[in-house]
Length: 221
Picture 1 (cartoon, helix red, strand yellow):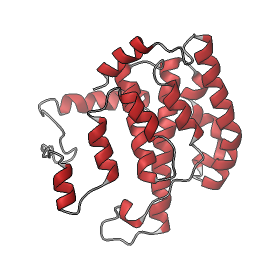
Picture 2 (cartoon, one colour; picture 1 turned 135 degrees about the horizontal axis):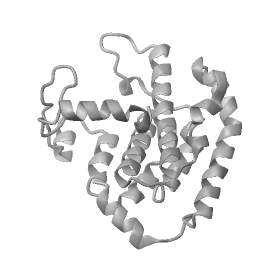
Picture 3 (cartoon, rainbow, N blue to C red; picture 1 turned 90 degrees about the vertical axis):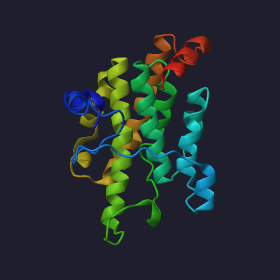
Picture 4 (tube, helix red, strand yellow; picture 1 turned 120 degrees about the vertical axis):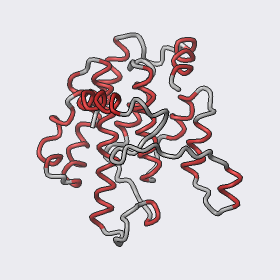
Protein backbone atom coordinates (compact mmCIF):
# COMPACT_ATOMS: atom_id res chain seq x y z
CA UNK A 1 0.00 0.00 0.00
CA UNK A 2 1.19 3.58 -0.57
CA UNK A 3 2.94 5.14 2.38
CA UNK A 4 0.52 8.05 2.78
CA UNK A 5 -2.33 5.57 3.31
CA UNK A 6 -0.54 3.63 6.08
CA UNK A 7 1.39 6.53 7.58
CA UNK A 8 -0.53 6.44 10.87
CA UNK A 9 0.14 2.74 11.34
CA UNK A 10 3.82 3.25 10.53
CA UNK A 11 4.11 5.92 13.20
CA UNK A 12 2.50 3.60 15.73
CA UNK A 13 4.98 0.85 14.94
CA UNK A 14 7.86 3.34 14.99
CA UNK A 15 7.02 4.13 18.61
CA UNK A 16 6.44 0.49 19.46
CA UNK A 17 9.87 -0.55 18.16
CA UNK A 18 11.80 2.58 19.05
CA UNK A 19 13.96 0.65 21.50
CA UNK A 20 15.39 -1.65 18.83
CA UNK A 21 18.61 -0.47 17.12
CA UNK A 22 17.79 -2.37 13.91
CA UNK A 23 15.20 -4.71 12.41
CA UNK A 24 12.84 -6.53 14.78
CA UNK A 25 10.24 -9.27 14.47
CA UNK A 26 6.79 -7.68 14.22
CA UNK A 27 5.03 -10.44 16.16
CA UNK A 28 7.61 -11.70 18.66
CA UNK A 29 9.13 -8.25 19.34
CA UNK A 30 12.63 -9.66 19.17
CA UNK A 31 15.61 -8.20 17.28
CA UNK A 32 16.40 -9.80 13.93
CA UNK A 33 20.02 -10.85 13.70
CA UNK A 34 22.01 -8.64 11.35
CA UNK A 35 24.16 -10.71 9.00
CA UNK A 36 27.16 -9.29 7.18
CA UNK A 37 26.98 -10.06 3.45
CA UNK A 38 30.02 -11.68 1.88
CA UNK A 39 30.22 -12.44 -1.84
CA UNK A 40 33.09 -14.82 -1.11
CA UNK A 41 31.01 -16.75 1.44
CA UNK A 42 28.08 -16.89 -0.99
CA UNK A 43 30.15 -18.48 -3.74
CA UNK A 44 31.94 -20.91 -1.43
CA UNK A 45 28.65 -22.10 0.08
CA UNK A 46 26.65 -22.26 -3.15
CA UNK A 47 24.43 -19.40 -1.98
CA UNK A 48 25.22 -16.77 -4.60
CA UNK A 49 22.16 -14.82 -5.70
CA UNK A 50 22.39 -11.99 -8.28
CA UNK A 51 19.61 -9.94 -6.68
CA UNK A 52 21.27 -10.07 -3.26
CA UNK A 53 24.61 -9.25 -4.86
CA UNK A 54 23.04 -6.31 -6.67
CA UNK A 55 21.58 -4.95 -3.44
CA UNK A 56 24.98 -5.20 -1.77
CA UNK A 57 26.50 -3.19 -4.62
CA UNK A 58 23.65 -0.67 -4.49
CA UNK A 59 24.68 0.21 -0.96
CA UNK A 60 28.07 1.24 -2.36
CA UNK A 61 27.01 2.70 -5.71
CA UNK A 62 27.38 6.42 -6.36
CA UNK A 63 25.28 7.91 -7.74
CA UNK A 64 22.53 5.52 -6.62
CA UNK A 65 20.10 6.63 -9.34
CA UNK A 66 22.32 5.07 -12.00
CA UNK A 67 21.87 1.70 -10.31
CA UNK A 68 18.09 2.20 -10.18
CA UNK A 69 17.90 2.99 -13.88
CA UNK A 70 20.05 -0.03 -14.72
CA UNK A 71 17.77 -2.31 -12.68
CA UNK A 72 14.59 -1.37 -14.52
CA UNK A 73 12.95 -3.54 -17.16
CA UNK A 74 12.92 -7.27 -17.65
CA UNK A 75 10.30 -9.88 -16.79
CA UNK A 76 11.99 -11.47 -13.77
CA UNK A 77 9.61 -11.17 -10.83
CA UNK A 78 12.20 -10.76 -8.10
CA UNK A 79 14.07 -8.15 -10.10
CA UNK A 80 10.84 -6.23 -10.76
CA UNK A 81 9.87 -6.34 -7.07
CA UNK A 82 13.34 -5.21 -5.99
CA UNK A 83 13.33 -2.33 -8.47
CA UNK A 84 9.89 -1.10 -7.40
CA UNK A 85 10.80 -1.28 -3.71
CA UNK A 86 14.07 0.61 -4.20
CA UNK A 87 12.37 3.32 -6.27
CA UNK A 88 9.82 3.83 -3.50
CA UNK A 89 12.58 3.94 -0.88
CA UNK A 90 14.58 6.46 -2.92
CA UNK A 91 11.57 8.71 -3.43
CA UNK A 92 10.54 8.52 0.23
CA UNK A 93 14.02 9.36 1.49
CA UNK A 94 14.34 12.26 -0.94
CA UNK A 95 10.84 13.50 -0.06
CA UNK A 96 10.33 14.95 -3.53
CA UNK A 97 9.21 13.91 -6.99
CA UNK A 98 11.83 15.97 -8.83
CA UNK A 99 14.56 13.34 -8.86
CA UNK A 100 12.14 10.42 -9.17
CA UNK A 101 10.02 11.01 -12.28
CA UNK A 102 12.37 8.96 -14.51
CA UNK A 103 12.06 5.99 -12.17
CA UNK A 104 8.29 6.33 -11.98
CA UNK A 105 8.04 6.55 -15.77
CA UNK A 106 9.84 3.20 -15.94
CA UNK A 107 7.55 1.78 -13.25
CA UNK A 108 4.42 2.90 -15.12
CA UNK A 109 5.78 1.60 -18.41
CA UNK A 110 6.15 -1.89 -16.90
CA UNK A 111 2.84 -2.01 -15.02
CA UNK A 112 1.13 -4.33 -17.50
CA UNK A 113 4.06 -6.75 -17.79
CA UNK A 114 3.43 -10.15 -16.26
CA UNK A 115 6.43 -10.97 -14.03
CA UNK A 116 7.88 -14.46 -14.28
CA UNK A 117 8.82 -16.53 -11.23
CA UNK A 118 10.80 -19.76 -11.08
CA UNK A 119 9.85 -22.27 -8.41
CA UNK A 120 12.91 -21.36 -6.37
CA UNK A 121 11.85 -17.70 -6.30
CA UNK A 122 8.72 -18.43 -4.26
CA UNK A 123 8.31 -19.58 -0.70
CA UNK A 124 5.25 -21.58 0.29
CA UNK A 125 6.36 -23.44 3.40
CA UNK A 126 5.55 -27.11 2.99
CA UNK A 127 3.16 -26.47 0.11
CA UNK A 128 3.83 -27.22 -3.53
CA UNK A 129 4.25 -24.09 -5.66
CA UNK A 130 0.79 -23.83 -7.22
CA UNK A 131 -0.67 -21.47 -9.81
CA UNK A 132 -2.49 -19.68 -7.01
CA UNK A 133 0.82 -18.92 -5.30
CA UNK A 134 2.27 -17.70 -8.60
CA UNK A 135 -0.76 -15.47 -9.16
CA UNK A 136 -0.39 -14.02 -5.66
CA UNK A 137 3.26 -13.22 -6.42
CA UNK A 138 2.26 -11.42 -9.63
CA UNK A 139 -0.19 -9.28 -7.68
CA UNK A 140 2.44 -8.54 -5.01
CA UNK A 141 4.72 -7.09 -7.70
CA UNK A 142 1.90 -5.13 -9.31
CA UNK A 143 0.67 -3.54 -6.08
CA UNK A 144 4.23 -2.63 -5.10
CA UNK A 145 4.60 -0.82 -8.42
CA UNK A 146 1.18 0.82 -8.27
CA UNK A 147 1.82 2.02 -4.71
CA UNK A 148 4.97 3.70 -6.00
CA UNK A 149 2.92 5.47 -8.67
CA UNK A 150 0.45 6.62 -6.00
CA UNK A 151 3.28 7.90 -3.79
CA UNK A 152 4.64 9.85 -6.74
CA UNK A 153 1.20 11.38 -7.17
CA UNK A 154 1.28 12.36 -3.49
CA UNK A 155 4.68 14.06 -3.77
CA UNK A 156 3.95 15.77 -7.09
CA UNK A 157 0.38 16.78 -6.29
CA UNK A 158 -1.06 14.83 -9.23
CA UNK A 159 -4.30 13.50 -7.77
CA UNK A 160 -5.04 11.32 -10.78
CA UNK A 161 -1.92 9.30 -9.94
CA UNK A 162 -2.38 9.54 -6.21
CA UNK A 163 -5.74 7.79 -6.56
CA UNK A 164 -4.85 5.73 -9.62
CA UNK A 165 -6.61 2.72 -8.11
CA UNK A 166 -9.91 4.50 -8.82
CA UNK A 167 -8.97 4.67 -12.51
CA UNK A 168 -8.78 0.90 -12.95
CA UNK A 169 -12.44 0.01 -12.44
CA UNK A 170 -13.64 -3.47 -11.55
CA UNK A 171 -10.73 -5.60 -12.72
CA UNK A 172 -8.59 -4.44 -9.81
CA UNK A 173 -11.28 -5.21 -7.24
CA UNK A 174 -11.91 -8.61 -8.78
CA UNK A 175 -8.15 -9.31 -9.12
CA UNK A 176 -8.72 -10.02 -12.80
CA UNK A 177 -5.21 -9.82 -14.25
CA UNK A 178 -6.30 -10.28 -17.87
CA UNK A 179 -8.94 -7.56 -17.59
CA UNK A 180 -6.54 -5.26 -15.75
CA UNK A 181 -3.94 -5.55 -18.49
CA UNK A 182 -6.56 -4.46 -21.03
CA UNK A 183 -7.37 -1.40 -18.92
CA UNK A 184 -3.68 -0.60 -18.52
CA UNK A 185 -3.27 -0.53 -22.31
CA UNK A 186 -5.17 2.77 -22.15
CA UNK A 187 -4.07 4.04 -18.74
CA UNK A 188 -0.31 3.55 -19.07
CA UNK A 189 0.13 5.95 -22.04
CA UNK A 190 -2.19 8.44 -20.33
CA UNK A 191 -0.23 8.35 -17.06
CA UNK A 192 3.12 8.61 -18.86
CA UNK A 193 1.90 11.68 -20.72
CA UNK A 194 0.64 13.19 -17.45
CA UNK A 195 3.99 12.67 -15.68
CA UNK A 196 5.99 14.14 -18.57
CA UNK A 197 3.63 17.11 -18.94
CA UNK A 198 3.82 17.94 -15.22
CA UNK A 199 7.62 17.61 -15.09
CA UNK A 200 8.00 19.75 -18.21
CA UNK A 201 5.68 22.47 -16.86
CA UNK A 202 7.72 22.55 -13.65
CA UNK A 203 10.95 22.87 -15.64
CA UNK A 204 12.31 19.58 -14.32
CA UNK A 205 12.00 17.24 -17.30
CA UNK A 206 15.64 16.17 -17.87
CA UNK A 207 16.79 19.58 -16.65
CA UNK A 208 20.38 18.27 -16.23
CA UNK A 209 20.56 19.76 -12.76
CA UNK A 210 23.39 17.45 -11.75
CA UNK A 211 24.38 19.36 -8.61
CA UNK A 212 20.82 19.07 -7.29
CA UNK A 213 20.64 15.34 -8.08
CA UNK A 214 24.03 14.71 -6.48
CA UNK A 215 22.86 16.32 -3.23
CA UNK A 216 19.67 14.24 -3.22
CA UNK A 217 21.67 11.13 -3.95
CA UNK A 218 23.88 11.79 -0.95
CA UNK A 219 20.80 11.85 1.28
CA UNK A 220 19.05 8.65 0.16
CA UNK A 221 20.93 6.41 2.56
